[in-house]
Image (cartoon, rainbow, N blue to C red; front, side, top):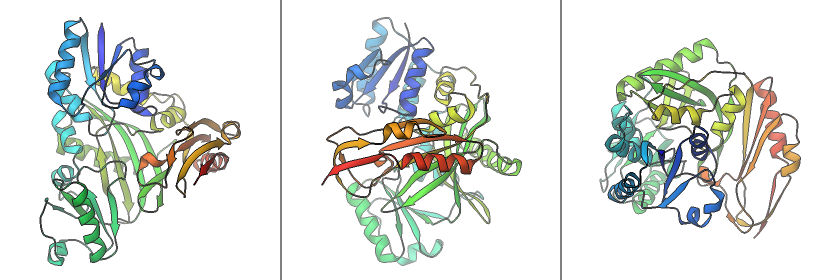
Length: 405
């Protein structure tokens, strides 16, 4: 059986879309998971043909399971992951069992924010930063290379806004550093300049060093205890000057990190002095990204990424061009979910193409400390971005989470 092994998945979103795509393409799908909840909910993963409970941080344990599959006659075509921190592990195993020209070393760098910053240091779009090694002493003199406050403090391995903090003075900075040190004493910490400007997310795919831009997305940020992206606006058409400047940054990254084949997304802010890179991730964005690009252009980026990791040429053919806006729903108070109302009204609202509500009754919901604390989204199409945004926001207002305090 021609088999694709996936290391980790979320229950919904781009990572799950990729498994469904592999099944559609006719492959036997195997999921390596260390999530006990997924094992208990096995029946809800009908697109996963075989689910194997294994420590996905342990190479030897996964190698053992791969050898077991091979002994049963499975032909491993590729090993991939669409989930934070698992992408490099998957590609390392793929190099060993089914090499297909993917860029493991580049992915390994991109999964570590300190490694990424160091590799791109000095380039025009790279912000000023310092990397503080574990247990290093930090004083005002250390910060002299950086601009004035505010500053951003983040863990070198932070994902989904979980460990990204802002400091407006030295005392607050030290509190944040101590907090991150307590959470992981062995992890480096990055301190970098705070960048003003509109934020964009760019989805791209690289095949034989040639870049295809899948989408340019304007982001809306909700500022609370963390920076949470709550709105995504897909541009149906991208002005040539903007597109050319984005391609220039992507080409520089691909060359500097020596990316031959791979998927990535970058987040940047457009300042009065040009682009500044916020972060790079070596995968398609999670959540609703695959769905919103499909609504905008008609192609399935998750499926094309699977093809890429099978050694095929991905084709991002735009069959349509719609402005699309995705509005995420967050809550302001903590509580146990009793019920959700308004889903049907949201689905029946003008322009809406998809509504998704994540939590079940009895789940503890909290104000957002990471992207994982976004509990629903609405995707809407429009003839302009402003129209799509207005339709998505109006429909999202229909969704209400009723909590028991």
